[in-house]
Length: 363
Image 1: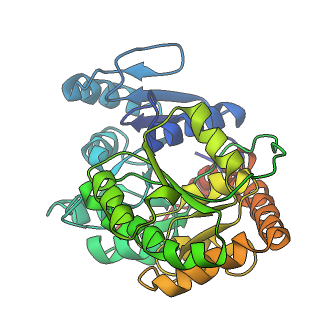
Image 2: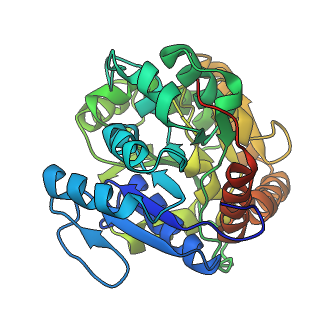
Image 3: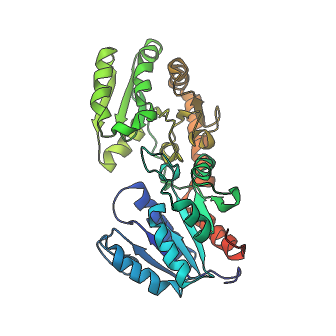
């Protein structure tokens, strides 16, 4: 493989069908490979259907293994879509010892967090032996993965996610609406959605028409409703659960500020999505959110445990529409520059070129 042409690629992922974040990321990779004119074979483990672009295996690991082994000889680079697929990188390496392997890492799945996905005992050694480069979404996730798996810093390349930047819809919020979008499962307490409700009494005292809309489904939804009743702010809180894409777009258009003081963001794509609609954002001053948000420029970052600080940030943005609009515009400009589909394509092209040039020996 030489660096002056696009390498032949084998892309093995979990799925490219459906509405999840990983599925969306995989579709973006597939589209970027096409835009870069990279000859690619795409294999998706969980997808049931096969079309001209993607071969699906319906969850059949044996049939996928056979196909990976057969296709590996003709591919100079293997793109691995998830750490759960690491054994397929070993198959590739056995078939193509001089090939290059890039693994995508999305966030919490590589933190070594036993509450989500503990590192398998054999994975650190296999990562060092068969993976040339780990393309990871943030420095925060990089550092956590490096500690969990005992990996060197030069194994990683920062490779942020992206969102589609659609035309900005002009609207004037009729109320001072705070929007949060999050999974509300039992394991999502570190999203600190409850702190938004705890901040509301202070916010309402300063901004009487303030209201909070929390979109998302899960076990915590009922607990949040109970908290709103206990704090006597239930008239100012809406928890509609999961909603359609159209309803979500409408919620963004009607909101004044997006707030999610989450301490467990591996990247923070929700803030990018809010910025595309022109909203200022409030996130935590820890985790990857602090990398994405520039405090005081395109939003605020606060200690997620500090409810008064959160209330003050909300009051500052709800009470100053001009400042909020300027921050939202700065965030949208940042997305267009760094996190758009065009930026994603450029980043993937640079990653493939860089790996083509990198001939270091795996340790």
